[in-house]
Length: 287
Image (cartoon, rainbow, N blue to C red; front, side):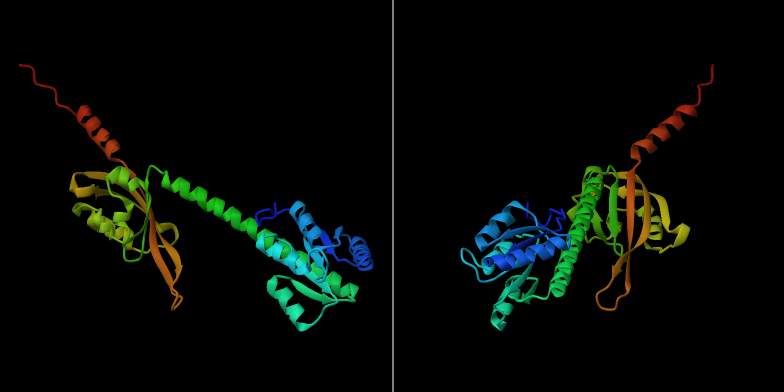
């Protein structure tokens, strides 16, 4: 429930302090400012509430019986509780401040607090938490989209491939094994010419090395490709286009490559050939 992946926004504050007057004062201030408030008078009580509820922020005293503020911070960090901890403490020496921030507190305010300063700090902490959760949600959606795309590519009946600017394979799906008998790992890093039969080499060079833009960016050509061990050849309708693969790390120059899809049309081509023969057979001349 407390993991980063839970993106529910609560607008709720947990106030933890063993001084009843301080607890009531903070609770009234935060309630009047529009926050939902829970309170705890010890670190152990706060940890129990954190296990049961979600909060945007914690206003936390450090020195308390039955579990200190440091224990609460440790629980937040160790369990991945996505909440911003703001220490509000009368113990304002440098070591206390440094230790609280080092352990994972978002900010440190001293008692007696200035209401406007405290409210501004809570507002900033809440906004930061919500932004972080939004980023997590976006990241999750991107991962899901990437997983779906990879699933589609891996289960495509066509060979999906990418070449670097030198014409070497940088990506292949498993269909290359089903159609040509090559394990994709055998071909990664190899030049595309390893797959292309001699009669198709010139065509392959033209479509894989020419960098086009605009409406002529995509190329389509039929290529004759080798099966493993040159046991046979198969015909593929190949569509490819030049793509930018980002910039190099040294000079920032664009890195170009080729993305393509190759569809096995061998059976279709053979069927068309047989249909042509059937259509144009020559009847025997009667005697």
